[in-house]
Each structure stands twice: as structure tokens, then as C-alpha cells.
Image (cartoon, rainbow, N blue to C red; front, side, top):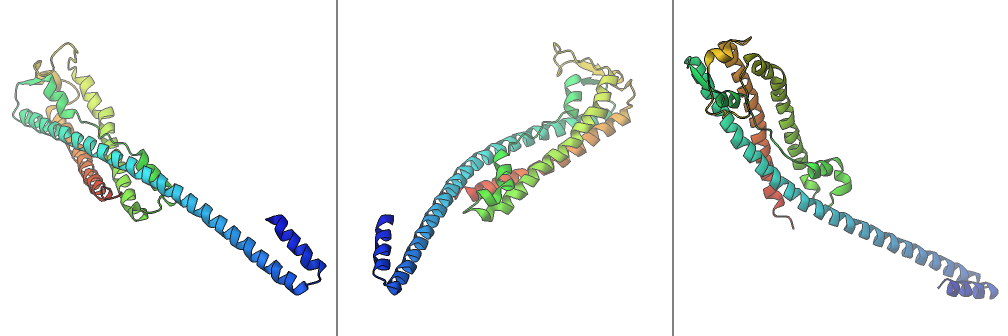
Length: 241
């Protein structure tokens, strides 16, 4: 093709047809420009197609991730609801000066179940949204809000972790409660004096349990909010092809 155009140029120049040569040159420039534009258009279309395919794969992965998180958060909420009940029951027994307590009910009053969830896909979409999202950019605000909700759970849980690492651990060590792995915690009974004969009085112990319950409720409020946001986003994405 290039050789063909070159021969035409040479022929026009030899015949001194300057006007025709100029017209031909302009036409050739236009043809080359059109060719370049077509090539760029094809390349852009191809790159856009790759982005759309990558986005589609991410949306599939995100749906699976949201479904898993929904199940994990729901399970944790149910377990922690029971721990909240155990805490209330122990406080009630302490206030009534009950004589005997099982090691299991004491530990359950201070226990909590971590809110496990996984958000690598969601994090990637939020951090690289302009590079990743093509047809679903309208969801970016929903993605950001959900990621903030997940981060809120972690933040609320740090207060529980800190309470455990300091005050609750101190109580367990100071109380001298016999944590024997071969003993059934639910049936092993100890007296009130056995675990209040330490640096913690009964009233201090009740305050500690209530503080843990308050922090747990704060974390659970955030977890419930995140669960609802997860389910809402799941429903929105379920209609995507």
C-alpha cells in the first residue's frame, strides 16, 4: 500500500502536476489521520471492554464477599446477644448476694464474640474506583459507606479489647478463679467470697460487668448497622447481570 502511494506521488511530480499532487497529499494525510483515529478507537474500545470484564468479575466476587459477611455478622450478633444475657444474669445474682456461682457463668459474663468479616474486594473497589468502575460508578457511595461501617465495627471492638487486656484480665488473675481445663466450667461451683476476695469488691465487679456490656452494645449497634447495609447492597447488586 505504501509503495502504491509512493508511485503515485512520483508520477504526479514527474508530470509537474503540482495542484493534483497537493490535492493527493492532503487526501493521503486525511486517510492516514482517519486510519490513526480508527486504530485509536479500536484500542480504546478494546481497553474499555477489558475494564468492563474486570468490573464484572469484581462484582461477582463482591456479591460472594457480601453474602459471607452477612452470614458472619448475623452469627456474631446472635452469639453476643447470649453473652449479654449472661452478663445481666450474673449482675442479678450478685445484687441478690447469691452464694454459689459456676465458673462458666462468670467467664460468659465477660466474654464476647469478635465480629469477623472480610472486605478485600470492597476495599480494592473503593481505593481504585476510577480505574475499576465503568458501568457501576453510581454504587461508589454505597461501597464507601459500607466500608466505613466495617471500620466502625473494628474501632468499637478496640475498646472491648482494651478492657479485656487491662481490667478484666486483672480481675481474672486477682480473683484466683481455678481455670482447670479438665474441669467442667458449667458445673464447677465456687462461692462469692472466692472471687470477690481480691482487689475487686462486689460493687466494682458489677460495675466492670456493666461497662463490658455497654461497650458490647455499642459494638453490636455498629455491627447491626453494618449487617443492614450489607444486606441492602446485596439486594441492589442482585439485579446486576
